[in-house]
Length: 183
Image (tube, rainbow, N blue to C red):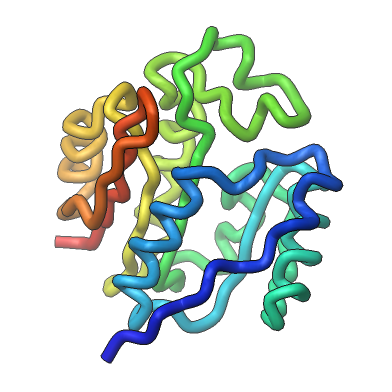
């Protein structure tokens, strides 16, 4: 039985140097609403202090407690949470940009994905098998330029199945939510 999740309150986001919720964020929320039976407890990570502070304020405004962890991807969770994460949600910087933009701090880091928009994603993909439990699920936001068929093959070689949970066109972007589970 599914219950509609209201759009989170986020009018304070403009007070921070962060990527404001846009079509990718709302597509991800719609996909997670569809899949909400998997979601119980949440932890979030970001390398941007402003994003972490904004997350705390957003969660408080929506009567949820989330304590973000400042880290690069999920490195601070390993080895402590090795093979114990049931749900991973990753809305990466996926925009195709010059490679050097990936190393920039601030707001650019929230969207600059480098070559094929995958430089950050490719680093994260290597961590996924060590994080997910046997029944673990990864939800990943991608665009067509990220070459989702290649991503599917990378995960297939690591022992995962992939399905497209939801898609949406937003201006020039064709957004997708991919879901990965172990074979």
